[in-house]
Length: 553
Ligand code: PHE
Image 1 (tube, rainbow, N blue to C red):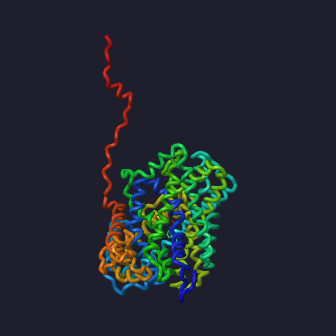
Image 2: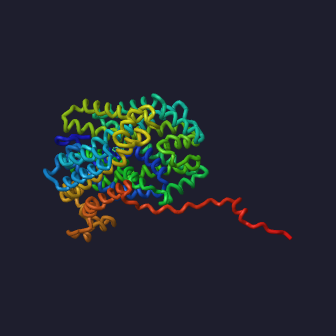
């Protein structure tokens, strides 16, 4: 980073792209994307995910970078600066929430009713600043379970070094993973080590160092994924996995799949909670926001797709079930490494790289909450990093001891059920579901609505034009044809430009798509086709009984 005026800037355009990619590429791509795809039936879900990235991810990414660069603040500060003194849309949303809350109370769901009502009141009081506040809250909830999974990567580095990952079949892989994550102190210790590393970096504000390293290490991770893909594809039976991953079967999607694909897109691109607003606040005025957003999205998506391709052929070749869940990468890849000469060494390198990728993402999460307390509450950086990191560590401990079930924190389960009526099968899943499937998409919806209807695409595009020269205003066809600066294409009035396309997405298409995903999950909009009648299996004995015996004269 370099100092320019009163605020630090990234050292170059590439510096910002790499840092934001460091935030985006992490466990979301390599751990979460393959296992969620596996649980949702493969190919069709991948298409849904790609659609969410294109229709919602890219436009919202442009919004976040623009908000950050324009305000040069943390998410709460950014919204506070642009918050209008009165806003009909905010009042409308607030009123709607209060009504919904009242309705839920009447239906006897007290926990949700009170929470929705309270949110409605807060919307009236704080209007759009609340979007930033939700982002800061999401920073706490995401990092609490994220650091537990990142801790598993540390545990697996130790396991690989000590040679205890040399299993060759599914059962051994499952047993090692199962007993590791439910062990009484190992996961806690690994979670502690990971949080200490994250806090150390944010405490000293030495992101530069880790960024320099990740510039070298991330291409290595990329190469290692390619190696895994080649090995996976050459295993006997791998083609089944390729088919599962690449040929879409829409009947395998469930009502929940749409929201999961959306949540995954937000999670993987670090969108919806202000991480990109915060990173965008250090972007130079002369940088091109459009190309940066496209580059970050493309890199992040490629890594996720490659991770899937490294996983599924091996899953089928080795006899794993694609829907095993969060253990997928920890069970399948070590088994594949065992099929490669010097397997243990490769496994050590892979888990170290995965841990670094998780670290660059975790830093961006902790940076959001720390930046809030530094900018808005005037805390010194050291205090902010320590206190926020400490709180997240404690929340994470609850996640770590309840990965599989509530056994060790029964009291928490009882209290959640008493307030909200029901809960997930573990606290880990509560945190995961709240953050990824609700907070991030809601954050994204409100960011799009705010830029599209309150701050206004006019203001935003003024900011984007700095540094993008005529890029935003060239006719889209000339841009796609590579004729951007051709004199015959430089008429002054262009209607179909990148700027207008983005405006339409941000005002209509992205918010409507997010709303559809929510309504679909709540069950108000069931676009799933009716289940076909189950086909009765044919039993040979029954058939034989029906054939009349042939009398032989
Ligand atoms: N994008 C990160 C990953 O894929 C996780 C993350 C989510 C980081 C939200 C910041 C904000 O691992």
